[in-house]
Each structure stands twice: as C-alpha cells, then as structure tokens.
Length: 189
Ligand SMILES: [Cu+2]
Picture (tube, protein in one colour):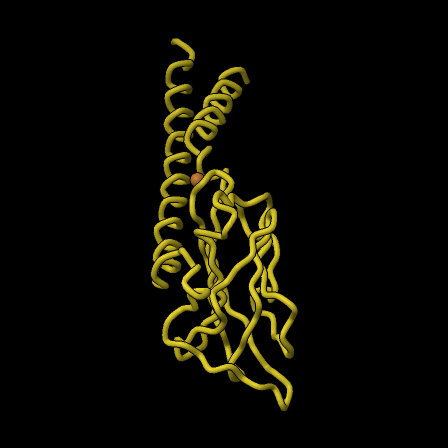
C-alpha cells in the first residue's frame, strides 16, 4: 500500500511538472453560433467565450480574430473584433445559405495564441440580403493586426500537436515514475 502511494505521488508530481503550460490556456466554453448550430437569422454578434479573461495587451484586439468562411473559401465580415474579458465579438455578415467555417484565434491568459474552428449551418429566411464574400479575410480597414489569413488553421495545427506532445510526455513520465518506484521499493528477498 505504501509502495502504491509513493508511485501515485511521484506520478502526480510528474504530471504537475510537465502538464502545467498546456493547462494554462483559455478554452472555449460557448459561442454564437454554437458548433453545428443552424442559424436562420443574423444574431447581434458572432462571439466566442472562453473560461477566463483573455490577454488583450494592446487593448486593440491585436492577435485576436474571427473569420467566417463559406464552402467556396470566401470570407465574410470586416475582420474587426472587440475583446471583453473572456469573450471576443464581431459583427456578423453572411452570404448565401450553406455550411460555414467559424475560425477563431485568441490570446490566452498566459500570452500564448490559441486558435480553433468549427462549422455551422446558415439557413436564412426568404428576403435575406446576402453579403458578397471576399477572397481575403477582412482587415478591419487595416486595423486587423493579426497577419495573413492563413495563420489561423496553421496555428491550430501546431498548438494541437504541442498539446498532444505535452500529454504524451506527461503520461510517459508517469509511467516511468511508477515503474522506477515499484522497482526501487520492491521487497528484498
Ligand atoms: Cu501557453
């Protein structure tokens, strides 16, 4: 029993030492629209809300972005976002009915950039005046300081890989700690 306790304690220590950085990132708790939701009318804002206040260092939304992209790869909206506490908002614009990607990027409380995306369906009522999409992301009249539009999905991929490596490393450390502890504390014959 004592051996098992030591092994578990070592394992927990290993997890705390290796998994710390990954656990500090803001994560999505809600959004408008929600992933997979079917919208039939434009809400006041499109938004993402995370678990804790975001880091808007310059107070100008630098590093934050919401991109709405249709099935043809066209972008909708002016690219302007507002950061308020744990949430990011943008004024919605939409084109024709269909499935859209909602790509977001935020600056986590620890200063790291986190991005991800989901899809939602757009089924406007008759008479909706569809906006014309743009081949490039909205730049908020030049104020959108995020860089090129390709950053979002690429960032998401690298962060996902990093998270996987952190978790893999933590599990490996736990396994090694448990084995070492069991070997060291093995009863002498
Ligand atoms: Cu981080």
